[in-house]
Structures are given as structure tokens and as C-alpha cells.
Length: 327
Image (cartoon, rainbow, N blue to C red; front, side, top):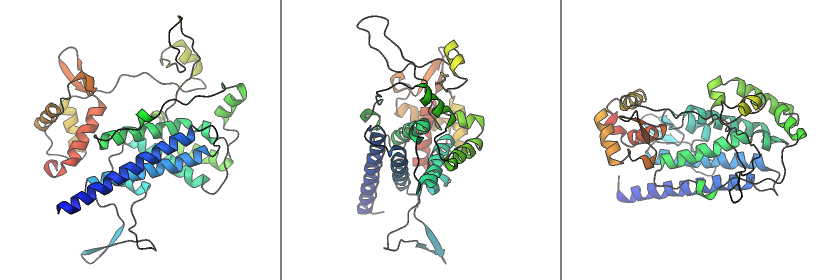
């Protein structure tokens, strides 16, 4: 490949990433804007665009063909629009491809939003902003995670965003609406019920599918002490036990940990049989990954280093970037 073509590919990838980040930022800013009532519909459309551009940039960086084509003999004929432009994969096709780097729970979240977009595309809806905000929040967090994981030199969108403020508390009527979905059109209620029922318990409870938070009013104990609007409640507390009958909470769990042999086996299972422990050692030394400040893992029992999921994602990206070596 010529240097000129490589520069062009890199330029298009960077343009896609720029548009992707802008679409995601616009989605969140619009959703948090109190003067806009058409929030959920706009958020879904913009986040689908953001994810599509993100995956197009990823596939381009991996030199994976993501245009529709048909074989005519031994040659490929690319499908085009009426105006002659190439037809690139839509988000569903990007997620369904065997080379997709996106995990199952994140895919469930995106397929839910894609299906919801189809349901509301040409119909007016009400009251879905609050009801589905947990899934919107998960979509945003998932996007930020993959933006920084797939493109390690790209800043995430988290530094531009913060918690949105509200001018009211949740009253009894709002609480009932949140629980019962009484204001939703019947076809939307049916869609949500059918999609949720298709997931197993573990998939449904995943924070990558829906990021559910319990908000508890709290005052500081001493003068001069900062107040936190949000209180995170431990899952084994009495308060959590009392409220979990109706509301979800953040469950404080130990992060999954992996030994090097487990990570190597995972890479083998994902199609990289030539990735060995030796290469894993070279990678973590190169990245200085055992620096506790980087958050890739931890020392267990004072002697054995265990790796977090965040490191596994980086190893996976490394394998994809060097697939000609490990496959």
C-alpha cells in the first residue's frame, strides 16, 4: 500500500472518529437540555450514528472491508446508492460481523435502542425519557469505554460531561409512572417486554445493558463538608434490601480477575492460537501495565498479580492489531 493511500485511510479514520465523538456529545447534551422535550428520540438517533462511525473507524483501522458488495466471478462489485456512493454497513451489520470487537451485553443494549428507534420512527411517544434512562446511560458509558479502548490515543467524552441537575424530586405519581409504564403506547410497552424477556437474568442485570442507580437524598455530617447528591448503596445493606423490591441499585461487586494463562486461553478461543504467555509478558512490560496507577490489575495475597477486564480489552485489541502474527 502506498504512503499516500495510508495517509488517506488515516485521515478518513480520524474524520470518522471526530464525527462520532461530536454525535455522542450532542446526544447527551440534548438529552440533558431542560428546554427540549423530544429527548429520547433524538438521543437514540445520534448515539446510533456515533456508534456506527466508531465501528467504521475501527474496521477501517483494521483494514476490514465494511462496504456491501457482490462477487461477479472473481471480482467484487460494490453496491452503491442512487447517487453513486458506496453502501457502508449499518450498525446492525457492524455488530453482527464475526470481527466485531463489541461484547454481548453492549450489543444487547444497542439492539434494544435500534429496535426502539424502529418502533418510534414515525409515531409520537411520551414519557420514555425517564423510563429508559438507565439504558441510555449504559449506552453512553459503553460508547466512552470502547472509544478509549479501541483507540487508546483518543480522549473519551467523559471529561466533557457531568451529572445533570434536576429542579424537582420524584413524587408518588412519578414513582408509579416509572414502575408501571402507564404512559407508554401499547406497542412500546409490548416491545420492551418482549426484548427484556428474550434476555437471560445475567444479561438483563448487566450494567452494560442498563445502568441502574438508586438516588438517596443525603446531607453532610459536618459544616464545610461537601454534599453529594448521589449516594451509592451497598447491595447487602438494609436500605438496599428494603428498596430493591421496587427499585434497582448499584451492586458493589469485586472486579473479575484473570491470571495470564486464562487470558491466553481467552485469546485462543477468540481466534488467536499463536498468542502465548511469552507475548503477554512482552506486552505488559512494554505498557508498564503492572503500575497500580494504570488500573490494569492488582496484587493478590501479596504475591500473585491478577489482571482486570480493562487489561483483557487491551490484550484483545493488541491481538486484533497483530492478527497476522497470532492467527
